[in-house]
Length: 193
Image (cartoon, rainbow, N blue to C red; front, side, top):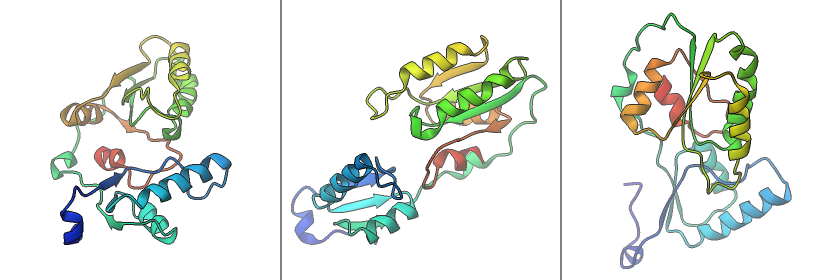
C-alpha cells in the first residue's frame, strides 16, 4: 500500500506527520515565509512519511525536495454528510462559517463584511470553530472588537463542535462562507456541500 514503510523504519518508532497546511505560503518570499519554509523542509528529514491532505502541498513539497516518503492521504468525508438540507427559514439569512479562528481563514474579513448587512437584522452569522490561543497569529482582541461592533444577536460564536454538532449547524444555515486566503482541499466546503 502507499503507507508501507521500510523494515528498518519499523524496527524503531516511525515518525509520520499529517499536514493540514504549512505555516508559510508557497508563492510568498518574505523573510518570515522563507524561515518557515526552511524549518519545515529541514524537519522533513526527521520524518519517515509526510501525509498530505492537499495535492498542491504534495506537489510543491516534492518539487522543493522535502525528505521522507511523501504521500497523498486525502480528505475523506462520510456519505452521511450529503443529505439534502431542509428548506431555508423565513427569518434572517443564516450564514455559517466553520474553521479555525485565525487570520488566514478570513474570519476578520467576514466579520467586517457582514457589518452593513447586520444593521436591519436581515442576517445572522454562526461561527463554528475554536479561538486558537496558541496559534501564530493570535487575533482574539480583533475578533472580540469586531463581534462587539455588531448588533446584539447578529453573531453566535459556537466554538468547537463535534461532527454531529457541526453537521446540525450547517444544515440550519442558508449560506456557507469560507473567505480563506488559502486552502488545499477544504474539508468544511465538502461538509457544507
